[in-house]
Image (cartoon, rainbow, N blue to C red; front, side):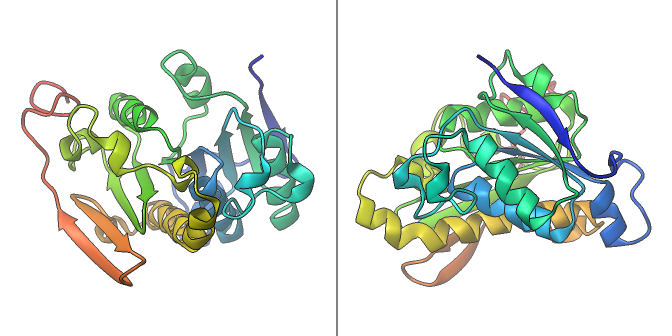
Length: 259
């Protein structure tokens, strides 16, 4: 059964369409959606809460498993068997008691998108392990003119890009068709437990970078966003690399005739 509710303990936050004069005030007014509460989403949500974002939306249909605990910072041993959204509420409340939470204990798909997105989010963080969901998020955010950041990890490497609809290369410009599914898999898709332990810091770093993208955008620093490029971190080699991308005129998602 689908579960969706608003858990508000503090003063209700207003959308950040009229950003305040200081970055802190802008973040307090902002409303950010985190899709996926695994390794990436856990780190992103915690960073955003600690930074002072006033409202977070949380989307995840799954329950916490013991194998999640080595890389998913929102969840504790006592969370095993519970919905990840419930575990996230408890952890985020411990960090920021006054944060407002919009909670959706079901997956993002074409049917649930209107219910999830009616809260008028200012920025979207896509943090799932699903290439299909990443493509869907790209299409939905383009249609609704919502800025977003997508990240994933595979092996020793993580990568990230941010999209400003109508202005920058979109996710499908970079990964046409269904090519993204293997290139941007979350560590949740890796079955070897020891390997996951090795990659735990990588997932946390990439999720934190996603939060940083949201914070830069919301606090008025769009010139420093990771747009028209893919930021790639190879943790095995301790190297960062920026790969330039371009908006493709004939992209099926954002190209000519699609704006």
